[in-house]
Length: 288
Image 1 (spheres, helix red, strand yellow):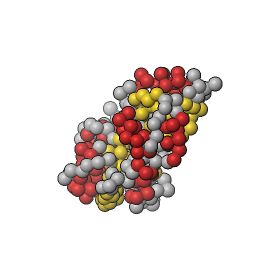
Image 2: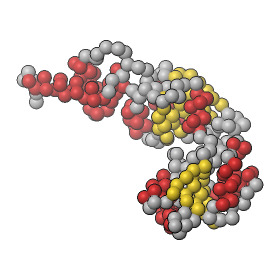
Image 3: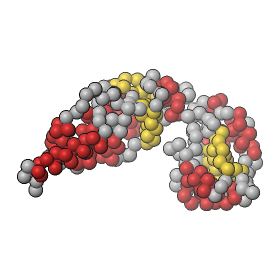
Image 4: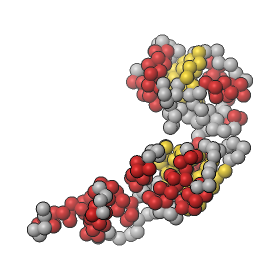
């Protein structure tokens, strides 16, 4: 009989936010897999519980290698508890590989719900929360980060990002360039901790503020793109804007995405306009 994999949410700041079941699961687990065993030790001390089972590390660097080992414990009928440094496992943290492996082998997976930086930041941001997208961490390299942001520039749902403090200013500046300087946003820092701060304002203003230096755990919430203006967009104008960018050396795919975000239309519509313009040009004898 297979065991059970338990994904346990841990406090994102204030340890008193830990759900009562967390201590119960720590005391019942045969194996506790922790992103940082030292942080786990501090948490268990605060909760007044000593895990009787084996404690192993499970972090980004050993996740691939350790997953088969933990799966063997589960297949042997043991209860494996997975915790990360803060929040829910597998949400921009280790856990997905183990969950996927357990599901594939028919192992039961359950969870101890806990605090979430994503939902907490959304609730505090003052931005629409009825529909949202979690985008995790942006790429570290500037070019890749700018390209990723252009992909979602026309996204109407509220966007949520995690970001490292030393990259916050650059990321906010890139967001201002991709989404518009006046797009409303909120930077949520050190949620539920002593120095919790929520800074709200236009992206350009937040980028200037962050340039002075920001510390702590960061979650950024950005308003979705405003609804496109009513009325059709001239396909010839769409094709012209793409052609201008291509003439400047921008790849067609990026040019189409940028124009789509600029006018608030689907990328497919812009692509079709470009194809129609090329076909018309070829039909008039202008093709090469």
